[in-house]
Length: 390
Image (cartoon, rainbow, N blue to C red):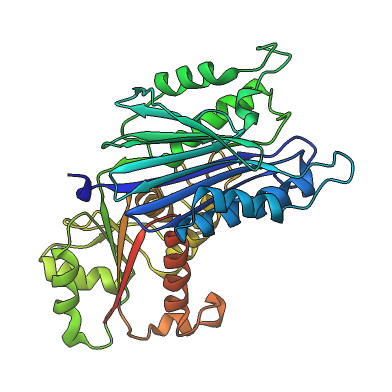
C-alpha cells in the first residue's frame, strides 16, 4: 500500500523581531520515495546564525542524500562551521528526517526540540537511542510509518513562545503537541499544518517573535494528479490527440487560454461560456465548461500563478495573498500548490498573435518560459512534474 503514497512537505519561518535574516534553515532533498528534511538552528540570531544554519542544513542534506553515515555527517558539520570569537563555540542544532521507500522513517536530532509524530491525529510515542559523536549527544530513531502520519520538526522558537507572558517558562513541547492534536486536519497539507503551528507561536509572541521560529512538516498522503493544458498545438491536426491524452489522465483538469478552451469544448461536445464575474480587475474572468475543473485565460493567469509560487516558497508568509480568492490564478494555485502531488503540463506550440502585442510585454516563447519557470517552482515544492509539447 505504501507504494501508492507520496510524501508531502512544507515549512514556515518567523524571523526574530528586529532581524532581517532568519537564523533557522530548512532544506528538503531526495526523491519522492526517499525524502530528506533537515532543519538547522544556528547559534544566536541574525546574519551569523543564518550562515551557520545554512551551512549545516546544506551539508547534512547533501551528505545524507549521498548515503553518508551519521558519524560522517556530524564530523563534517563540526569541522566546517566557523567558531564564534566571543563564545569560542561553533555549532548549529539540527534535526534530520528521512522517509525511506515511503515505509520507514529515520530521525536524527541534536539539541533541537523533540520531533512530534501524529498518527491518525494523535501523538505517536516512538523509542529512540542516544549516542555521543564529537562530544555531542545525538538522538536517533527508526520505525515504520503509515498513511497520514505527520512528522513535525521545529526550532526552539516554538517551545519558547509566550516566554515571560502567557507562559512564564515558554509554551513547551507538550503544549505544542496538544495544539497540533486539537487542530489536526486529515485534509490539510504539510505546509498548512506548519503554518497553523507557527501562527499560534506568533500569537504567543504578541506578533513580535522573541526568537527565530521554524516549523517543517512531512506527511504521507495519497497522491493527486493535476493536469494543465495551455495553448493550441502547432497544428490543428494535433487538437484531438492532445485533448484525448489530456482528458485520459486521472485527477483535476485545468485548461488555460481562450483558443485552448474552445478546442477542449469542441472535443467534449459541450458549450463554452465566459463568466461575467471579474474577481480580479487585473485578470481575465473564468470560463464555464462542463468536464473541465478550471477553465481560465492563459499567459496572464499563469504569470500570476508563477508570482504566487514564489510567495509560497518564500517560507516566511503565514497567509498567501491568493487564499480565499476566487479568480483563476488563485484557484489554479490552490490546486497546484496544496492539492497536487503530480503535475502534468500539456503545452501547445502554436504562436499566439495576441502575444506579439507590445502592450502585453509578451513575445513568442514567453509561454514556454512561464511553464519552465513554474515547473521548476513546483519541483522545489516536491511535486513530480512532466511537460508534454504538441
